[in-house]
Length: 390
Image (cartoon, rainbow, N blue to C red; front, side, top):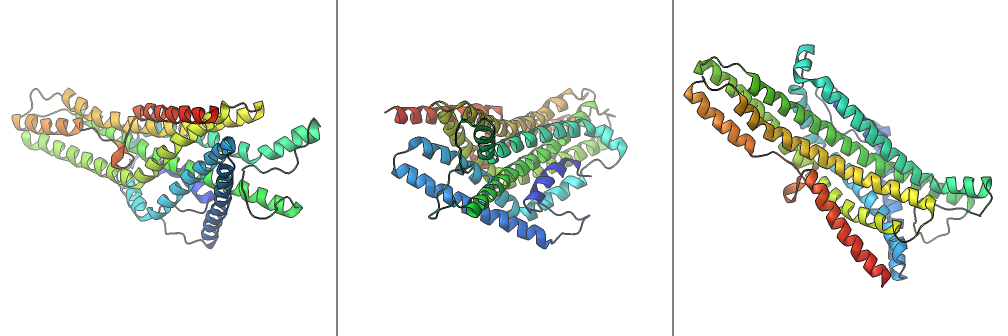
């Protein structure tokens, strides 16, 4: 039934995570999945440790551009790891939320048409596939970039010697240029890149899947309120109103759980993305070869797309929740019982208190958040440029 979740679950499975359990399915306790998860975590931790050491050396020797370059990668890894660990930590809460979503999910073909399920599924599928492809192209462009340089510049065109290079700058206190050591490092870095990207893709797609369903339920409730034919009988009409209020409360509780699960990862995501966008933009302005420019542009575009995707769904939730007040007002309440009209005022007043996707208590996420983030990124970018020129 939970068709919205399948893309997120696919990417979680690729890093050994079972994000939630369902009452309808027994919990899987796969040794292979556990080994895969910890192999991903340990490998990613080792690689990011090497990047942090490289950052320290770059700063110690005053190499600002190299330091900014490696900080972009550290930020990317930090976002991926934080999202994976929060989903792993919040698995019981997430499982309870999925169970609640199953309870209010359309159960029959008639209900699916009433909820306009196919429309939301098509939208979710289109966005999920596009976003997953974008991030997959990004990470494998970075992972295979050094190999492609070797194949094109050294073997095919024979215009320069590329030699043994790694996708990401790291420092380890031993020589990795040996035959077996180089290929081991190359595999580990590619593995780490896949882990970090999959953690981000899976968590973002899970957030979008749940947000889409929340919007679907808000929109369905709005249509119920707007198009319901009142009888003028207080007993019958109050029963409809009571069911509408209970449905609204279930959706609001879902939003509370959603914000509890994703609040801290989203806050960290926005904080780190501010710096990553700044760092990548700075590298593009200091004079780099065309092939590096293409790689940096892809990184910048992907980072901004990720932030916009989250802000877009935050805006959809805000619009759908506030739309309830308009739908309730459009109801044909002129001939309703005076008690019904008074009760309807409370529903309108509650709906006017907009429900937001939140990055903890510090940030309510809408499309305006994207503008704020870009403004902050530009300020840091201007500071970096000033430091570089001096």
